[in-house]
Structures are given as C-alpha cells and as structure tokens.
Image (tube, rainbow, N blue to C red; front, side, top):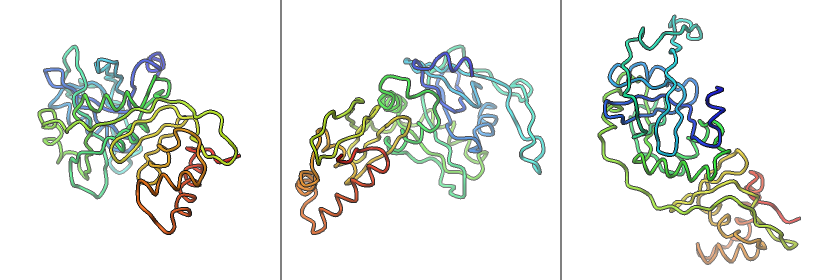
Length: 282
C-alpha cells in the first residue's frame, strides 16, 4: 500500500488483476472483492505472464507496474473464508516480460448471467471502474484520464460468467480481438458556475465530467454518477444559473412540448439536487 500511496496523483491505480503475453500486451480484469479476480488470474497465468492478482498501477504511457504478490487461495471449499498464501512459482504461474503495457480491459460480473463478453458503453464503464480505483480524485482530470485509457485499450468489455474456467479462451483471445470503435466525447473540466441570481438553479461544484452522445459521467467530490435523458439535458443547460421557467423552455425546445413539462423538470431538478449534483435556489 505504501508503494501505491507514493504514486497518488500520478498514476491510475486499479483494483485489478493483470497478465501479459510475450509481446507485453496486458489483459486487466477489474472487479471488487468476491468477483473472482484471484481465481481468474491464477488460471490465466498458466497461459500468460503473471503481473498481479489485486493491484494494477498505470503511468501515462500505460505501462503496467505490477504487484506479483503471493495469491490468497481458498484452502477448503467447504470453508471459503479459510485461505492460504501461495507463491506465484508454487502455483506454477508464468513470468511476464520485463515491460508490459495495458492492451485490453475486462470488468468481472460473476453471477447467474453466463452470457460471456459484452462491450460496455464508455460512460458506464468509467463509472464502474471508478469504484475500483485508489486515489483517482487526486489526478488532474480523472474522468478524462479514464476515458483516454479506454480509447487507447480498444474499449471495455464486461464478462458475465458463472465459472471462470469456461471463459479462459474468450479472455485470452481478447488480446487479438478487434478494438471497439472509439466513441466521440466532450470534456467538461471541473469547476463551478459561480454566483447565482435569486430563484435560479446551478450546478454543484464538480471535479470532472465526460460527455458521450447520450450519457454524461460526472464526478462530484469522490462520487460518480451517469446522467442520461432529462438529467443530462438539465445539467448541460446549467452552464450558467437558470430559472425553472428557463429550463422548461430549454427542455421543450430540445424534446418537444409535453403537458407535464414543468412538473417533470421540477422532479428531475429535485432528484439531481438530492444526489448533490445541482444547487437549488437559495
């Protein structure tokens, strides 16, 4: 942890496992505790070089600074909390090349859904990845850094699975799979709207935001939300403080007339304020 703390504000640190082929192309599998990272890496690293089963640290060149610590494995299937440490060599894991760079990203979703690998929309991928980072908010433009990372790695895939052993070929094959198409985006650097006239709504101060066609991923403090539909439209409209009537007009122009437009806008504003994304009139 001390090594990771020393990189705060400089590197992207992910709660992820990582393996690399002989060409230094890294596959990262990301997920919370209990998602199956260690089991996935223990199996993948019999075919690819072992970099880490828990933490991946990335510099701006996307070089992976691995942490190949001993694996914590279940020693008794009847008591899954009983674990022991096994060294990489004892586990028969392969060694990685001296230098490796992130090439593909997978988010682990273990459960009853066994549909395999599916491409993820960038905004939702970013939001999920943020939950598995350390010290991300200390980076300059943290969400933009993740968006650029996703573009450089050909997108993000979600793996929906029950048994990871049945998905190894898919995961290894992803290193040679075609990248996803890059999705156009706009960056809204962190800031605040400033002074607001009486009766007007405004954005809460935000740390960073990245807008895609139909979604916006927004970071306020350490919290991240994905906005779509009316919520997205309202947040974008509040580049300056505006009254509810002005916001109703804006949404009507964008979405068309609706008999309940004022009530719908009022409800959406209240929800956004409840989530800490907007500031209500004082």
